[in-house]
Image (tube, rainbow, N blue to C red; front, side, top):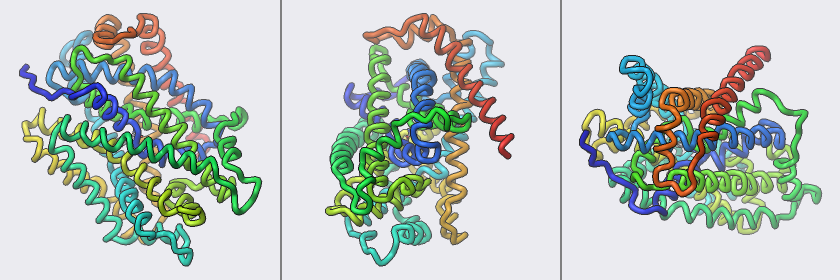
Length: 469
Ligand code: PFF
């Protein structure tokens, strides 16, 4: 098969692009609110367990699948699954599995984008509002500002379409000049602004209650609460690990399909996980939660989806220099969302380019149109219904994040662990790697622990969901 696909230009570009893919709104918007919703420290225990038992094994699996597929000229997951399953089960069953996984991943992508691009639009709009002081006037509560923002078609649809157009423009230029170039600018800025915000968060004193210190906010996140552990929170934690590492979405494989045969998968994948977890637990956890806690107390943290867009602007309003810190915060969110959505765009462009021979520039425009269509229901929900609870968006996020991604992960572990097999998997992962993954890691984790843990989680959380009505 002719294979004239692009490769990543540099090692740094590859790492920043992969980190950009993983570090997204999941880290800054979703993580704090999931922690808040699921009992703080009670969430963190299953979260770290899921990182070790599911996240790390599957990230190697997905990188491996991606490079393997890239050799055959394919950046889409259905084709990779087909090629890998064919090793053991023959053409017909492999084709069925490939189609099943491909369709599931495509549906996940579509469902995630049905609301994710919307939030990217808000982050761009709120960066603008921060710079212009748009939410600083105390005459209107920040809740009211948010409601009028999402119900105002010019603002909410305008910034959303602008963000999508920027993405299309970036993607039309290809892997190196598009994805890699933007990641090289946005990712360092994201860390820089994030670190400035951490220093700000940790040096705050509460103007409201001297007991509400930033450290107490961190306590909320870090003190383990064994007795509050529930199956649903365990599934939510696993879902968060999948979401934040971009697992089960097909986009890690897509990026990994541009790897060269001698790129070091073990080191690069591990570095990406490390950069992502730093951005999630340290930046995501240390900025939003302590800031909200210091000004708004324990109640302020339980802000649901509105934590980033309602609770924090309220704090920026009260804080000296808040307008600038607000701008840093929303730009961090925007850079995070943009460099992740770029991966989703590219995944769809790859399908158009490789399966339907559409030229890249046209594909970028078509994907722009597709994003508009799938995003329209959540974009229009507050405008048309004049409501502000974002019920559709929140429901989608819960289902995709906590269910579908995890199901895809289970299928991947089965295909790679049981059909593709140890020899080929390790050969692909370890070629070019300085540290090699061992046979016992494959046999213990990828073959047994990862799929069994996912199966147990799905069974028990579904049972407890049904029982609780
Ligand atoms: N890992 C990304 C995040 O944490 O936000 C997940 C993601 C979602 C990537 C949506 C891309 C995307 F379009």
